Image 1: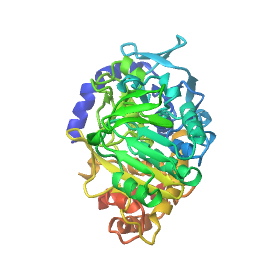
Image 2: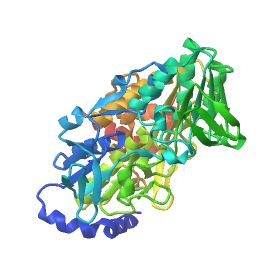
Image 3: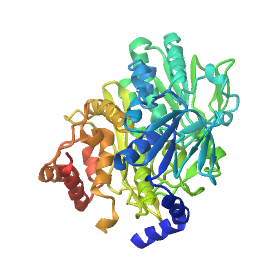
Image 4: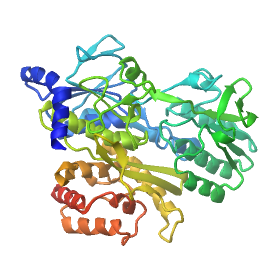
Length: 421
Length: 80
């Protein structure tokens, strides 16, 4: 194991590592692109594990609006301000936060070019750009069409837009949700969204219906969600699997119509969640595979496409790990430790990776899935057998659903502090 | 084999996603115990063997070997 690992280090980074390090007094310069869960965590842990390392974080937004709990905003249980994370904690941790858009990566010169023309040199680069939406993946859909049919799959203005439409919808209206095929950001997200909007409808617009036209034949936490839908919102939600005609063929924003094998269905509010791929900078820098996502070494999250570059979070291909804020947080820590070890010329430390993903069905009804991962060079990232998995199917006197709803809020507060300070 | 796995520190850092940085939970989730190695080991083993009521820690604890639990407890015990 150790020999294999050492061989890998020598093969991949030693040649480019030694010369520049001898010339530098400092521990090294790391640039991080993206201040979401992945990038913020990587930056924080780099500084925390080695205060002498120079860390610069590039982010185009002034603050981060998190996708976690954005479905609670859609249900009216949370505000956009409540899910907005300041970058001040990162600055306080000694990280240089640069507001700007990373427009190109010069892999040879090891520098990142920003949209304003300035350049940031790096010894190691962490790319954590999240997702880009592939609007062309749904015929008739476009960035412009997202004004009529919001995706709300990047939290912010789109979340507000969809919430406003749901508020304006009359009682007895139809809300259509169209989730994409795998892989995509936050696999249980569309179904949590359906749940929290149903919870809102139940309280305010009980005659309304929710139709889910799915590209898939099954989905994350399906058994738990469907049991909850039956008990909490009987008769309100219809889910149509891809094999039953659920896969959306096209949409027409002008008539608010969705066309699928199931037929043509008009909605009062339509939420199209298009297919996705790694953020644009990963595409343009050549860090992606043919499938649009970034292959990485599972031990370090080093790109297999470019030296001195690590890709973490939703943009990466991380084996059994879902594209989630929790995964990105864990990957940020692994990348930070791997980078510091390689800058110091030490062996790569063994990675520890986990994912904890809570979903709310109602504000008092939470469910979860969790895994601790095993990582090997051969098999990549796999779940631990006979461990992890879903919330108990039948709640006991412990009151699992209510407890997990409270833990979901605690998780949000604590992962936020761990990521952004 | 054990020395090839993740360090106690690396494993404990993954706990912070729920339990907060350094295990100092700010809300909802219990904080991690510091300076009490035996108690941490006992509780983790009880979670692992379904002898302690839990929503999620039973699922999490089953992922760790007894050696890893000891390593986790060691690192936690040393946290200031």
